[in-house]
Image (cartoon, one colour):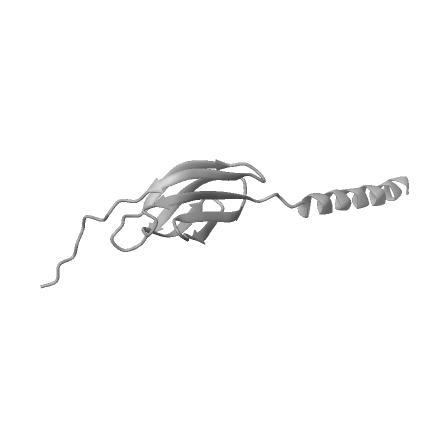
Length: 115
């Protein structure tokens, strides 16, 4: 009878601990930067092993928000006539907002000629 009596408080304690950690929220972060030429970028993507988020590029600037801590690959989706660009190994810690600086886009040298 004693062992049954001791199991109930232990079970309650375990459930409380589980609830505390299950609903413990992380502090999200963001990655921001610029793109040149200003008219070349369309959208910025942040890709990790667990997350993929995006943000529109406005006047050459972007900020991808609500990111979990981790290592990201930032891809700039370019408009027609420019090539996409990427920056590897962007490390984001919890609740951080980091500026990865400028990403320079280059013109796409492939031109389709219709006869």
